[in-house]
Length: 108
Image 1: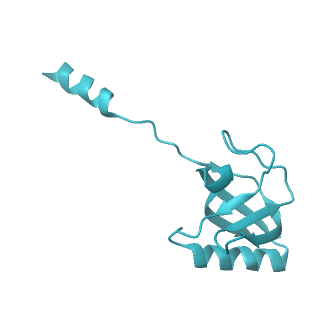
Image 2: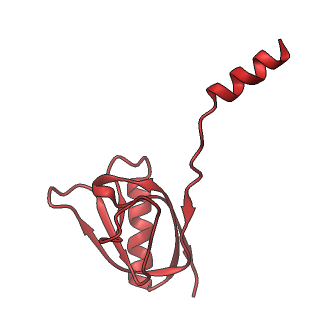
Image 3: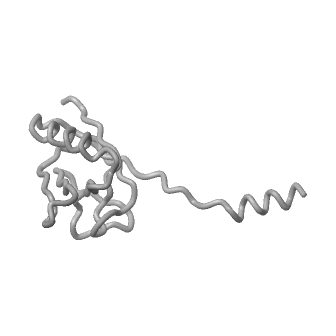
């Protein structure tokens, strides 16, 4: 019985993607998509996330993110103050861009 439970637990587990925190960087630009949806973020660093676009290394904040307004405000603040940010991405989003999940604004 004990071994059956262990085998069942192993069979039902899924790998969990923990995401990636990108190093400190400055935001160069923010742009909305052609249809007015999503927010595209360009920074001063050459970014890379596994399995995401290698030709266009922008980060996307999808408009269905539950904290879209809060994160947009933080990004705008960091852009205008020229503050460093730490960006936490979780896989790839729309158009295979790195998908933004969280922002931390860091004082200079």
